[in-house]
Image (cartoon, rainbow over all chains, first blue to last red; front, side, top):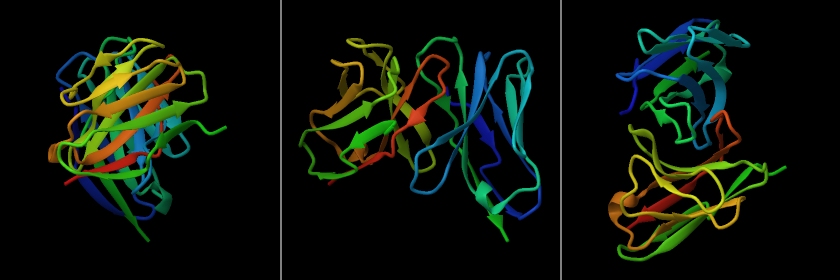
Length: 111
Length: 111
């Protein structure tokens, strides 16, 4: 079952912050975040393993609340280059049977 | 280092025709995946492979077949194309942590 992402779309001014949420109805082994620009392939941002860790990548960070089966992606002081569609991908079993992706969150950064 | 290469990039088929999409990776990855991406639906897993000679069904396998005769190649076949299979197809590969490297995508239109 696909994880649920919210919001579906966000429009920001450059320099503003954004939060994208991902929630699952199943217990998760890990959560992955990818960004896809229009007409391009998704690109890996970060992976969070169960244990409630928080990771960062430049001004993009994420948290994973294993108990609530939720993850959030935080974009701080957004830049024009952050525009794109963000997908969370969830892994249930820790095996190699692939990620289940949410429907995506469209992020538009305006100058 | 090419990464993941998909061919062809674009294809137009008539209903009932067959075709094969080729995915090739040069990273010596064990795991390979085929996803389809439709507007508003995110990425959905069609089939995957955890090693040479192995294949398994994903979330939306009906109407597709796959083969992995060589470790570096993963083929996706449509035996009798239907308009519902109009989509963008992404191949991805990973080593062990499910950090996916995606190909550039293949856009298929079925008339």
